[in-house]
Length: 148
Image (tube, rainbow, N blue to C red; front, side, top):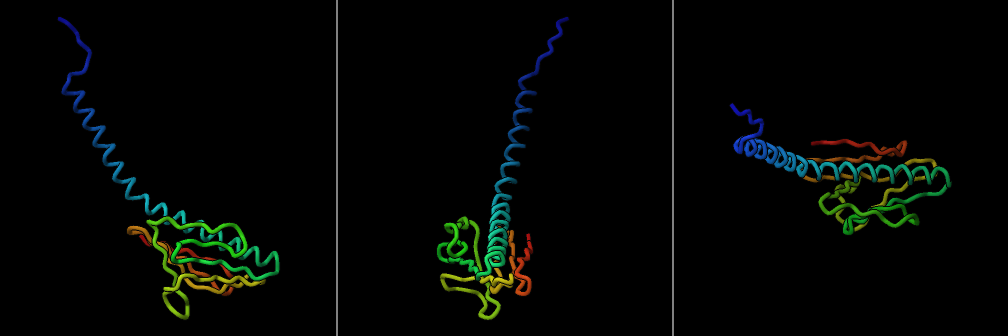
């Protein structure tokens, strides 16, 4: 009696089918989470820029301005580095505390030498993920709120 210890063609096909099924499912899961990751990444970058503008204002004793260009979807500290761009798949909305939603091209967040901030709320979204960045006018900090 011969003892063959190999795999049959049916077993090989079954294993290949299961591997391709797992790869296909993971690809779908990863592509759905990608926009969510971009929103989080942009929110972290904007918060870091807010902290930089505030600390620059306190350290230099001069007013600092953080400009947002809604048309170009970019932002940056005035007189600082070149503006950073927000990816096309991430939508940007700014709400002014007095005027409501901003529809003009530019919006400014102003930081005083004492660290106090003047400005509104930034809403970033992509897919089902939304991140809201609110400035605290008293201490100048940025508060992040996430919603899936």
